[in-house]
Image (cartoon, rainbow over all chains, first blue to last red; front, side, top):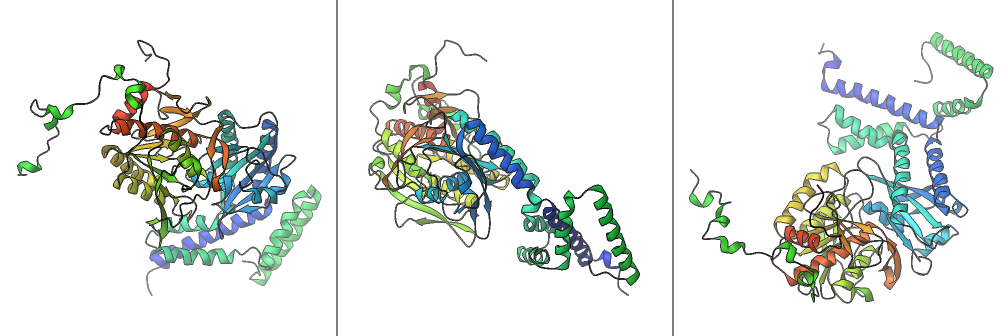
Length: 265
Length: 279
């Protein structure tokens, strides 16, 4: 007989993988239970931005990969609704510039210039006269852009406006950081792997991440994910109904114990 | 034992026989704008614009774009390539070029585009562009972007020091967002924020770092993409005003070091003057 498994490097890595896999699974389960937490926080920030600036619209675009793009996640204000769900290339327009440079900037007289990213603006159904945009910055990187269109009280934005906007942007960045686990599971898994096993090559890390992430394909119609979705719908139940659901789950668990093995690992 | 040639000679310039090499400027209090850049055109001074590219045929650029380069990521490594067409993906680099050519009409502009292609290598591309500007060398570089990557801190620190010691003035737009921002927070660069007075020649020295200079950056009429114009606000429109002043000073006084340029800017800034300064 060889040495106990847990003493070999492979066994340590396997144990770490199991832990990471479990953590990732829990992260995805958590995101299924509260999928809209991030959007709710971001929405409250653009709502407040529109009120404070008395603006026609405010929106937040977040950077997403595969393909790289800026996706407008939330918007507010009388002219804001058309932006939600829209994507722009990160090398395009004001949002792209602010995302790429991390520099805040504002333009006015933009509608007067027929060439200025009018196509993008027209897709939202609203072409602004003035626009201010600031980056959303986490500890080490820019994760998105907060934009405000057309202040009612003035034809352009002041530096004070930009500084105020930066405060709202830092709130938004904090909200995003708080829900980052849900957004960026693959990179979380990769960094955890590197911490437990610094010898791994980039290719090995990527292969392991894709294996673990593949297991978490939440669009897959497995009974487990269907159950998670069902349970997530129970949030609004009253106390007596929740008691009933608890009783049912206990019966199922006991049934599984009697059979010796369960369907869900 | 090291040979004589290998011994350090830091004190050599200060020997009585060699002090002739130390002849410098007039005393700061006698320096005014007329001395600093009166009649200067920026002629003979090359200015790098590390940004989104520059539209060479934009009327505001006055035909001063001499070279267009881009940094592209090839197999994960930043590579310097010539731009086949002198264009601008966003409009921002052209805005900077227009401000600079408007104030220093005979400068030679070298565009080094780092924005608009591969986002993953953004920081590395920016570092490569700075390195290129220093090696050429240009005399002044306008930087409207910065990096927040801790990993690149030592790289940018080294490059900023190299620029400083080799006489390349780096003018960097201050970042309004809290947190690290390289190289705009380094003492070896000139960091610029915006003031609202509509006057390209009005600028202030701020004795409380890290942002040491303020120039016009609010509602500035600027050149934009496709031959257009817009009105823009931000620190990144303030920086090119200082870049232009540096180019003017260097065209009139080519031998100045970045330290001396900064001191002259402080000496001729629009600050109110007093016989003594508060601590």
